[in-house]
Length: 159
Image 1 (tube, rainbow, N blue to C red):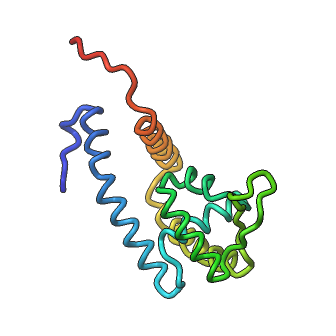
Image 2 (tube, rainbow, N blue to C red; image 1 turned 180 degrees about the vertical axis):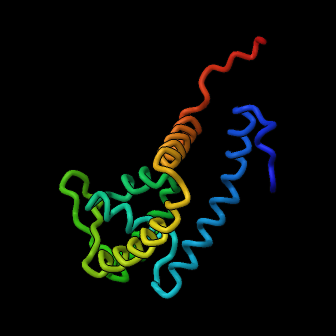
């Protein structure tokens, strides 16, 4: 969908950009799925492995909060990853029904390879933009996400 952004106000342009989110997410997911072909890892499993790579260990509720997805999905994926030997389930001394999860050596290697491939692609793609553009993109995306979680706040419609 071509859009003449020169004729848009900043608010209209931001709105049009937000409207691109759903197809962008579908396209990113399709790309990630294609890149995971042959790894035996699904997109959801990849997300959990990446979280655990970053935080070292976490409970299911912590992973659910980080990923902002349904608890049932995380629980099912964790159970499958443990059964396949890709995660360790470790008793939590502070909460007997909420175990900690950690990567195994096998899953560290798998997610390491996946991330290396993705970062090599990002290194090529990043050349299309300036550092300032990338920082601005990150700031806008982060702010939009925060606003969508917390709500818009008070909007004055008295004009």
